Amino acid sequence: MAASGAILLLYVVAHMLSNLKVFISPASIDAYAVWLRSLFDGLLGYEGFVWVVRFVLLAAVLVHATAAYQLARRAKAARPVGYRRRPKVQAGYAVRTMRWGGVILVFFVVYHLLDLTTGHVNPHGVHGEVYRNVVASFQRWYIALFYALAVCSLGLHIRHGLWSAMQSLGAMTAARQRAAKLTALVVAIAITAGFLSVPFAVVTGILK
View (cartoon, rainbow, N blue to C red):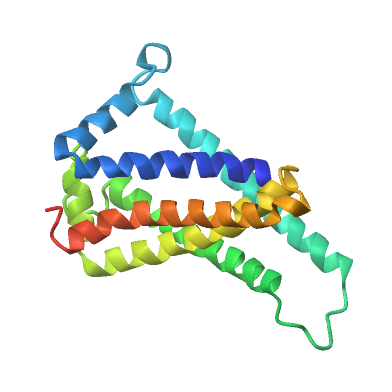
């Protein structure tokens, strides 16, 4: 769970930072997309690197989901009879948030691919015109709202997941617990703010 989550988190950070190129210029993010598809093209062919990354991400998602299912089954098996009176604890809330957040993210990723990767549901939908596709997508308020919901779910997922991963990978002691929670919170807020800045800029007319 922790190892696959770390792979996904690295991709999320890279993806968020690359999205911020829309604030430089349309040519900047469009050129970045071409550069990314041309990376190692002599060895892997055009878009070969992108497909390698996609397969790695797909494998990480499958491992992550499988681990989540196995951990849930293990927790249930550890206590087959439920509590007569279940206390409202932070851990229970976090677990429920992770589960529903994961479901929301799955639906979002599918739509996001159809919107900004294949262009099938994008109003502009021209391959290579990344900037125009992004603006056209977020000019629809309901898509911007759906994106915001998914990104907030991602932020909650990262906050709890990163803290849990540090525990699983042995990077946290009792003395470091508070600092680890703060680190997870700061990382989650930074990533969430970075992703939300793009639809916010489109909705408010900063990007057009």
